[in-house]
Image (cartoon, rainbow, N blue to C red; front, top):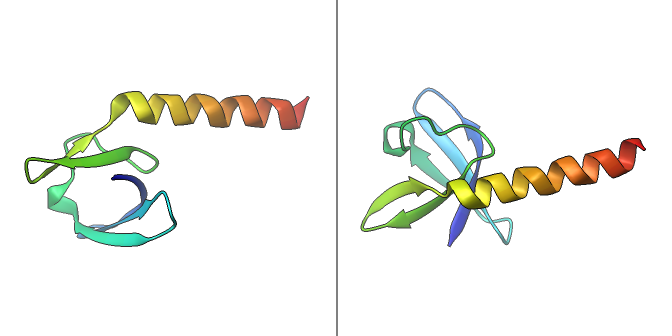
Length: 70
């Protein structure tokens, strides 16, 4: 399952899954460089950035915004 980073606090991170469910993580569990909007997946007990999915979703949002503006 994939999660989108919704909010990052000093100690707690809120992530949302594809169905709108939310989980809390310790900020220390995040991969280095993770930021709000990034997609995470868990593998071998650790959280990893899914950079390909993050880029795909950001591109999709840019296209949607562009259509709204035009």
